[in-house]
Length: 163
Image 1: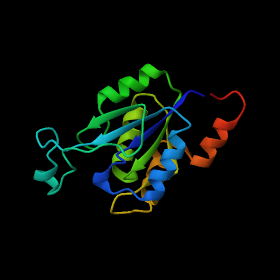
Image 2 (image 1 turned 90 degrees about the horizontal axis):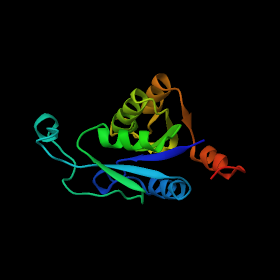
Image 3 (image 1 turned 180 degrees about the vertical axis):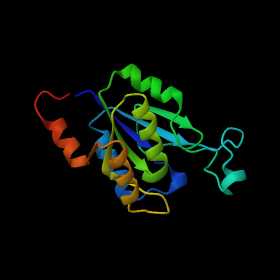
Image 4 (image 1 turned 45 degrees about the vertical axis):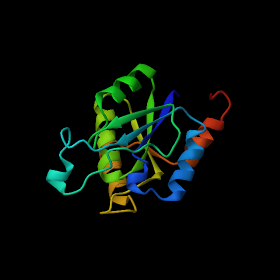
């Protein structure tokens, strides 16, 4: 199966737990990977005006990726969606920070683009509302159904015939 790993906003601004960074580094070493980094530009997304906080204006992905996309706001930009379409992938494995917000927003954009979003449930952390990510995982299962774990992905990749 042609697939790619999408790592959502695993960057210093959001202080990801070390176990997540380590797990994503292991997973990304075995599969084509793209990442998003959320940066602040009040002219594009008025975080400060509406929420009283904002991400950093400069940051970078903590996970090495084949391609990194900058975004301003919750969801991925059109450039990322077009890039994924161009790869001809059958499935996008989604991981990262804020399962119930930014990760879920990526799921909706991928779903709408016909890119079969599949959440890697053990490689995601929820927002401050639910750090366990249980709420985000439940929302994901309700809307998209497709979930997996990093162990399942690595086992699939180890099968003969998989690149």
